[in-house]
Image (cartoon, rainbow, N blue to C red; front, side, top):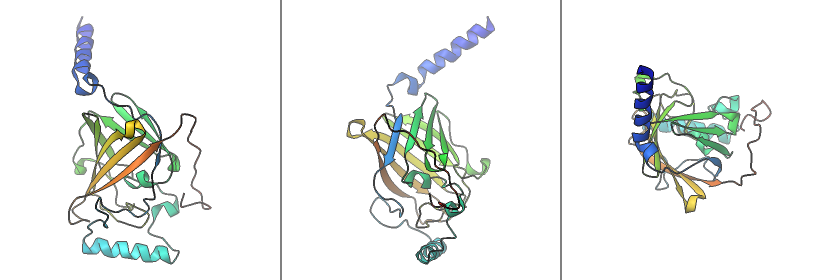
Length: 226
């Protein structure tokens, strides 16, 4: 009797949840980034507002890449892109969507990004610093709002070398536009150690034909920038 009552209560709670009650859009499918985002700019076309020390690191990274020695860049050593950089990689992403979880499978290094819908992002000091962090999301109408934190400071935000600290948190607003043919991602980066203020950038992805599939992509010493 207790078990049946508990199951009934859980079912009622699920039916009452906003994500279940409303008709949410489906992002499922394979998506390919529009444009070249190897050098990230803000929504108004400027470099992110870096603090002086961060700008020094950025300028050093740009100079090293021009010399052909981008030693700052983790992917040249086959380490993960990390977030948000993996979103800027010119490789397709397959999205699998369930009620409580949205999973992004990146062809780049075959990195998965797990987004937990209905959870709340814990404070950074309660999370282990890693490459992909921890992501919690909620629906706001037809927009999936994703908050991510718990990053290490090893990666750069883009190929050019924009740095970040372990304090970085991301806010992404994902929604379908163009009748569902395009996925828009408006990303807000907040990192008081690195930037003078939060800043936004916008990227879009084109939905691929249903016959499209992810290929195996393995990083080796012959293609470290892949």
